[in-house]
Amino acid sequence: MSGLITEMWAGRLRWDLLQPFPQPPAAAPLDAVGKLLAHVDPDALDETGVLPAVFLDELRRSDLLRLQLAPADGGSGLSDWDTLQAMVAAMRVCPVAGFILATHNGIGLPALLPTLPPGALRDLVVARLRGGAVSGWADTEPSGAANTLPSTTATPVEGGWELNGRKIYISNGAIADELIVSALLPEGLAGLFVVETTSAGFTVETTLELIGFHGMPLGSLRFDGVRVPALRHVPQEATWREAPLLEPVSARGRTYLVAAASLALAEQALQMQREVAKRRIVDGRPLVGYRAVSDLIARSVADTAAIRAVVEWCMLGDDAANLTDRFLDRKAAKNATSLACWRVLDRTMSLFAAEGLETPRSKRRRGAPAWPVERLLRDGRILRVTGGVDFALDVWAAETALATVADTKPRGLVGNADALTARNREHLRAAAAHADRLAMALRFVSNVEDQHRLGALGRIMGELFTMAVTLAGAPPDAADVYCVEARQRLAGLWSAVVAPDQPAYARLAADLCTGDHPGV
Image 1 (cartoon, rainbow, N blue to C red):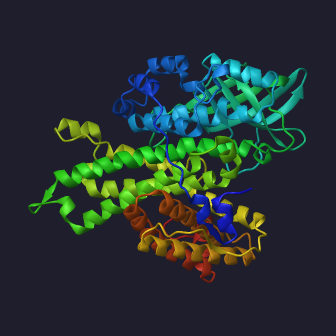
Image 2 (cartoon, rainbow, N blue to C red):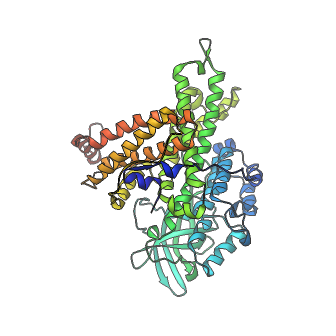
Image 3 (cartoon, rainbow, N blue to C red):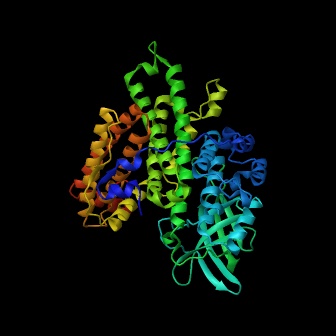
């Protein structure tokens, strides 16, 4: 296992890995995205929560379901980078439409292909994709996604398997023709099955409504004795999360889903900030003329540049090598991009003030510019939960580091950073010092149940990863501003790592949950 973040666990900031920083190629044509999205009005979708039927019809006829399928199999053969650009382009226009595309291409049937050997199941998946099947991944259950083993069961029957159980919050679940379904096997492993949604016993109980992404075909699903032929059982020797390629492929998929949406929403929010800062006049001065507003905008520009740098680092280059070499970097990208996006959106709401809280419909009624600030804020908050709740991912990152790091080689900065500005060289040296401190802290963590400290260490890893990538890939001033802000956040995180135990936290939580808290 290699990558930038694993080196940081060991106390090394591998600047040499970031040089030269990968550069995006010329943009691939995305005519199919524009053609499909012509059928969707994002404001109308947000108000009604109903996807136009013509959108789904056109989606099944389009090449957007086969973006990374080899041309010999009827696909477009796009790279990871070009696929992500298609997701970003769709999400700039309509985040829900982009999420449907990203779910299918990132964690649906196409995601299985790198893991499948030649044979009947692979042929079936390719045939279904060529036939226009929309797909998704059905893993989360009513008991929560944090449980390592599903309660949905797979029982051997003649000719295959029988599935029983429920799934919830399944992206594309309400429209999918095929679903990758996790289920508990008799030997205690979590297995995967490719399930056709026309199968007897499969039911979409309801389409769930979120606070954002209105119109998302998010399904609550039931499996009552669903028969699955043997060839539709994904071959495996371990629980699917431990299989060699499945988790790396799903990490790539989360990048299509979360990082792409984070970039699209942050870029749109920057346009809004520019518009309102130039348009609004306070005491005879444009908003942009006030230092507090200028600083707010600068932080948002820096956060958006950081998102783009992380996306470029994770998705440019050799796709096959990145699948494993940057696997954990891609996992870190989920929090790095969604949290930066949230900061941009939160500032945008503050800048728009009451005008941000107002819906586009209300703005249009009074003849005001109908920027959908409120919608973006709702959508952006969901990104911090999608693919794993942010604080839980920080804890798991630290746990992974503790289980992995046994490296005693020299720590510190590796590589020549003379090309950076003087300020950014100082930021890089500071990040390297933090990485060294991180390695020491990981070695002396004695209580793996101390999730408060583990979460802080996991967030420190994410901050250092994003600092390094931003210094390498963002414009100098944006990198400088990002690092100034990140170093302030790091100071608070380290105080959480070294702080003595605070028993009042546990007492307050226990009092509330046992009903002894005043006013409850």
